[in-house]
Length: 196
Image (cartoon, rainbow, N blue to C red; front, side, top):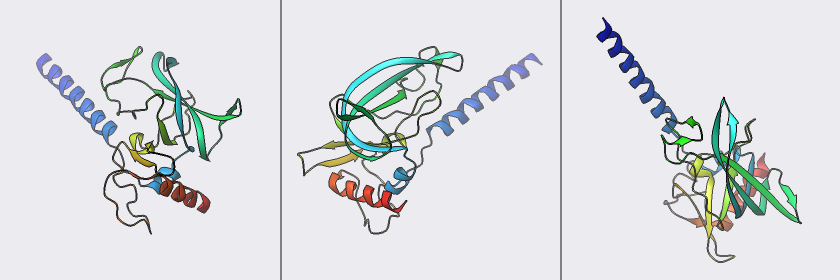
């Protein structure tokens, strides 16, 4: 009888882990309209600080990383005014690879957070901060576009190579995966926001 009970316990535990893995790793592909519609803030800017820290949450400690961004183009949302510049802070869970320990809380399955680097310029679509002050980019790597190139000739690409970015959007035409003109994205974002 004990062997059957142990077998059932192991089977149920394995099933729960498999289910949590499956649900935590599924990510809806979003087009630009959906990214904008789900964003609390939309802005572009340069990352000037990256600070690792932690917060108390659910009886444990969760490792965090806060990105401070000097905003050059505010599309949507409110920003901090500091020394005549607009500033945005994005505080995310920082747990490294899935299964690693974040502070004292173990995350068995944590989706890959976007890669954001100090000194680089990005276009961000961010979620509304939780009660604990945590947020992320909409669709994780989908809502984080690295901007590169010379002013007026800039390109933007998200962590999914912009796959599906214009899917189902009227007038957007077809697009192969890869960078798009940043100026084109700016126009489309303004157009989307003006409709709401």
